[in-house]
Each structure stands twice: as structure tokens, then as C-alpha cells.
Amino acid sequence: MDENSNGTSRIGNWFRGLRAEFQKIVWPDRATLGRQTVAVILVTVILAIIIAVLDFGIQHGIDFLVTL
Image (cartoon, rainbow, N blue to C red; front, top):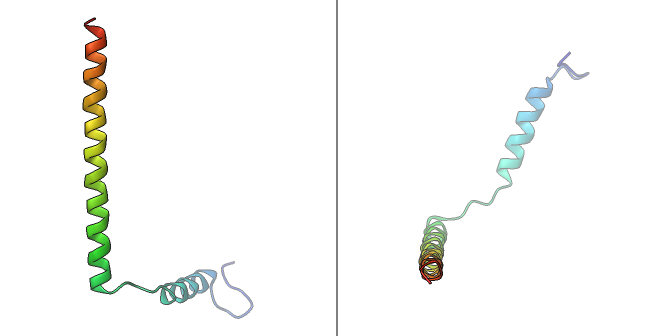
């Protein structure tokens, strides 16, 4: 069933492989993680402002055209 010729289960092999893959990950240090987090937040805020300004402008443009 779940046993192969070595007597180990497929699930056990999967978890060993998963652990091996996780050990290959290079985790960022705290300073790098902080800088990247700040960068993501800044880009998100800037894009939100751009979208809000475009939304505001388009809405007022449509309102102006409707009232003609």
C-alpha cells in the first residue's frame, strides 16, 4: 500500500523531501526584511493614491459630461 521496498512510507519520504527543500531557503536578515517591508508599504500607498486620484478625476469627468 503506502510502503515501498525499503519499508518507508511515501508520506515519510515526502516530509523528508519537504524538510530538505526548506533547508535550502535563504531567509533574509532582520534589516533586509524591514527594508523590504517598508518598500512594499510605500509602493502600496503610492499606488493607492494614484488610483484614488484617477478615480476622483474620472468620476468628476463623467459627472461633468452627464450635466452637459
